[in-house]
Image (tube, one colour):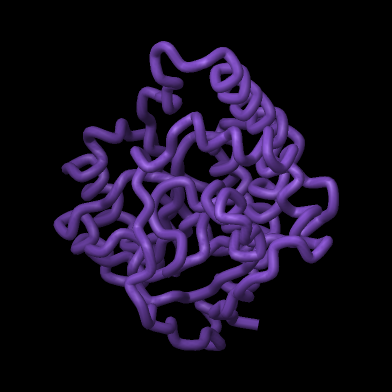
Length: 266
């Protein structure tokens, strides 16, 4: 009885895989590889916009190293590992691994959408880890938009059933980010992910020993954010208007608003 994890190839993903391994149930990993593409700043953008764009991604890289290290090798002791390009993920190579391993849980994190044909090869639980608090922040940029909309308290991570709807399945477990004074948007994102990873082994242990509470269906459709919704000009609000101190100003009471209601296993 074990877990097969299909994941991305960054240190963030390796960090989460190690959290899954801490449950004692991780038997295999498939790493999805793809040509990395950063959202480009528009041609002819003002110098200030270009400077913020470069700053944002440089600080994101530094924050990720600080929280997750620089290790991108997903090989773990006693865990079978394979690498498949994104364009081949919904195909025979992936299906053969799922069919052979027969996982009790197929767990995905940071990959493209799996087709129903692929999911049909997995007979047990099929869950996805999404870096956002559903149903409010489904899709792309789930740790950017809450801060941009001045509600950092709505930044979180969700594990949910895999369905046809993007990030729309019943919720297994959620956590919200710890609001720590001094965190910029990238540090806060990493802290939120690390906080979920710290809880994940216990959630998985409960899934295998029969103590797991039933997943809760999402009650609203929420909002699905697309990658094309982000423009580099959005960074002016984060850095020029609020000096990358959204968390501090929320803690100071400047941004009153809704509080998250999460699905929790403990």
